[in-house]
Image (cartoon, rainbow, N blue to C red; front, side, top):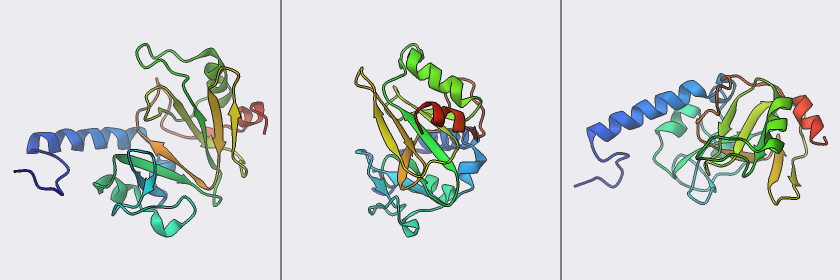
Length: 186
């Protein structure tokens, strides 16, 4: 009989989860995992505390360490909170990746080139990308593209659902992505 608080169904599943968590931790930039701005996320993308209560992207009392967030069983995954205390930013590219072929849409490939060698991960949907880096973005914005896709740029007051699924051969470090932000109309 499974325990209601158990994260896994068996020792075998527990070992697989441990390996997957360790792999994700190796792919995430230390610039993110060293900051105490982690939350859990619900299936509908709402941010949660490690105890399963509602978290806030503007209230540091609801955030936790990376270690505590990964050990929590609340929700379905992790999220990272963007705050005005530093220059960590995320460019969120919606519906730009073919999950079957791994091909990136030409418009998104251009943004990736502008961003340079920085950490990029596949979004939870499997068809979007999150470009992580450093830039001065105090006012977030959403840019609607003519084809219905969107590019979102945030640096504070938001949280981003994390997967740890590195895109391609991108590095596990965050670079200055100011050029990419500027090219998008900062």
